[in-house]
Length: 441
Image (cartoon, rainbow, N blue to C red; front, side):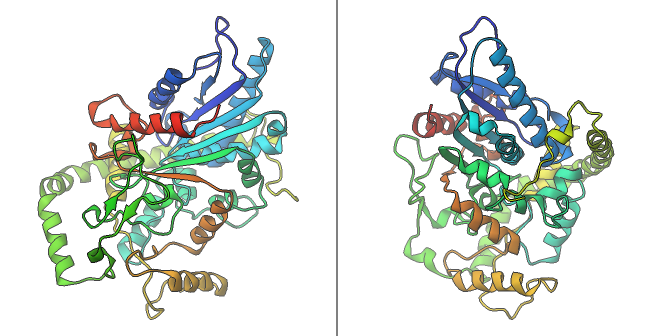
C-alpha cells in the first residue's frame, strides 16, 4: 500500500512490518482497521514488502536495512508528488518488531528522525528477548541448539547465539544497549506500545513479547484477569492485569497435586496430542528439509547483499552502532515444537548448577535475580543477557498491554487477524484498543 497520485497527501507516514515467513497480506487487516479510523489525507500507509516470505530468514540486520530503504524511498516519492512527511509511526508484528527496531536505529543515524517527528512505535507479539526457551532441562537445551540452526541468520539471532559484527555479542543485546543508535532512535518516539499474548502463542512466549522475567499466565485457572473496560477482557489492564486468589499464592512445586493436575491436562488435550504424534513427524521432516534449503538460499542472498549486488548500497547503512562511536507446514512444525517446551524457573538456592559456562558477572546477575524471585510469581530461568535486555528496554518506557485471545488456539496469528476468519475476531478488539486509546496522530 504505497502512494497514489489521485489521493490527498497526508503528512503522517505509518509503516507496517510483517513477521517471519510473512508477506504484506498478513498486515491487511491492520491496514483496514487503520483506514476505518484515519482517512488517507490524515495518515499515509506503507506496508513493507522487501522482506516477504523466505527473505525473513536473512536476519534482522539485513531486514532492517531493507525496511529503512523502503521508508526513505516512500518519503522521497511523496516529496516528488509535492507532499512532505513530517511525522512517522511504525508497527511491527512478530519478527517485524525487531526488524523495525533495527530500522529505527538506521533512520536515527542517517538523520531522518531529525527531520521527521517520531510518533508511535508499536509491536504485536514481538520476541524482544529472543525465542530462547527458559530452561534447565537437557531437552530445552537441545531445542535451543536445533532451533538456532534451522532459520538461517534470523534463527541464530532469535536464539541469541550469534555474534553481531565485531561486538562479540548477540544482535538483540546490542539492540537494547542504552548507548546504541537503536535505543537512542527508539527513545525519540512519543509512544512505545506493545501487545503481548498471554496464552496460546505457539511462536512467541508471553515473557519475551511482554519484556518480562515472569509469566503469571501459565495456569489461567489460578488467576483472575482484569480487563480494560470496553474491550471484552481481551486487552488486560496494564497496571493490574491479574489478581491472585489466596490459594494461588503458594510456591510452585512438584507435588502429587501438580502431577495429577498435569495428568488431567494431558487427558483433556489427548486428541490434540495424539494428532501431534501422527502429524508432527511429517511436519518436522518438511521443516528440517526446508530449513536446509532456505538456509543455503539465505546465505547466498546475504553474500550478494554484502557485496552490494542486491540493490542496496550497504555502505549507506553500515554506520557505527554506538552514539559515541512449504510455508504453512514448515511454520506449523516450528510452532508445535516450540510450544511443547515447558518454561523453567530459577531455583530458590544455588545448589543446582545454572550454567557452568557463565563468567562471574553473569553469575552475579543470576544470583541477584534469584534473590528477587517471589514464590507465587517465580523468575524465569532466562539467560543473563536477557535479564539485562529487560532492564535496559524498560528504561525507555513502554505502554505494555497483555492480550487474552480466547477463541483461537493460534493467538499469534489472531492478535493482528493475520487471515480473515471468525476465530481471529478478537484481534479486531486489539486493533480497536490500539487505534482508539493509544495511537496518537
